[in-house]
Image (tube, rainbow, N blue to C red; front, side):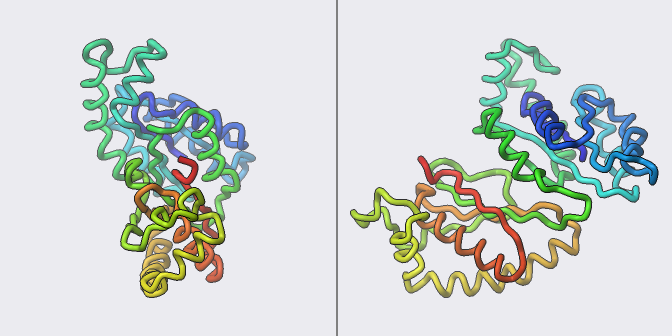
Length: 279
């Protein structure tokens, strides 16, 4: 696992979490050393089967992709995790810790963050998994890493996550597919359903009982039957499908849970996350 991303987005926190999960972790590794260190997990006599290499920015940005390409040609399973966050969030983090950004501080801090974002765009495009840490505290980030890698093994296939969210709280940026559920009648306008969520049986019955819900799920089943095998064939390690409604408490929660159940019936294990259900 190669961990890259924006300065201040949480690379070291992710490294600590992976170490707790039993990974052999090397933080702030100079990129030219990646192929040599990766041999720890590749050579037959090695007792280490999971290595996480945390690469920093600065002098080595131009070397990250060549090193990653060399790794991908090796016998081991190689993935790259990219961490990002909004500029405002990164500025707040640097100001609160009084640390200096690798590219500048003070009045130049926001500009430095944007400069690094541009420089790492090509690296981000090659990532197998992108995690946006803007709204995650250190404990939430650790929980996210445990969800993603807690049961990880070299033999595991594509890991699928179904996410519900509310558009009024922002569209998640670290997802692969986004589907809008706002075409369905909103339980929020039913007085007795408003204080409930899509986790409650009465809300679930209301959403699934709408005339358009069954045709929508039928066509979605067909779409996923087409897409999922193709993603696996392309070697995609992680897939996140997000369902959104206005507040992220009713319609999207029901549909996300129903889709996960349907995938389970087809032998596809999917974890379910409800980002905004408690808001």
